[in-house]
Length: 190
Image 1 (cartoon, rainbow, N blue to C red):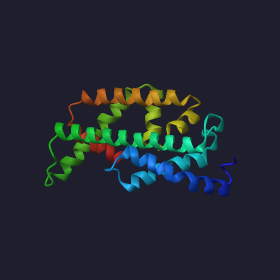
Image 2: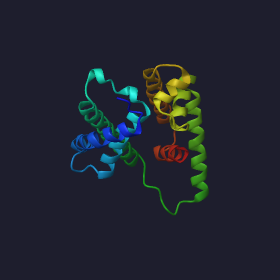
Image 3: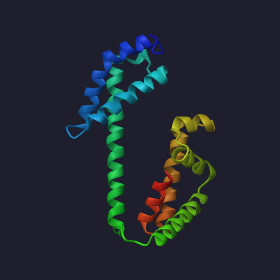
Image 4: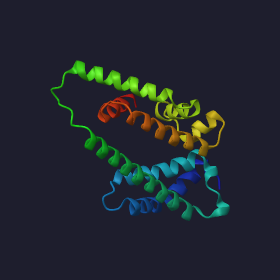
């Protein structure tokens, strides 16, 4: 089956998209937004269109492969939403809410100090970790793209990013800056 053929792909999409949607909705639960389910289905089929080799017919049918990948993507979405929520709670618990009438000059100075702290922390990372983080955050590259760019396995790239972020967090935790300053500064860069 040639998944690069638009007619074949359209037929595969029509046959298997509903099952992918049901699998994603089952993971996301009743609180899952319809747009999240649609995003998962879109991601599954976009990946299949871009790289048809990810599907190996010898290992199973599309009827089993597509829902399995949709469940996996939905779980990833749940995990990332949970991580973002926990990070937001930690930031909120550790730092006071910003005062809307705060001095804009003081806010700019605080951003500059936070930016300098981030740059110092980045400078402490090994080059491979710093490059992987920079390409992922500011280069908007996936782990696979970074791996292809660097000529290393995807697992190596993921490990570099994970270890680099952990080390970066440790460096920033040791700084005297309020967490909210660093988080807002990183968000403004991203």
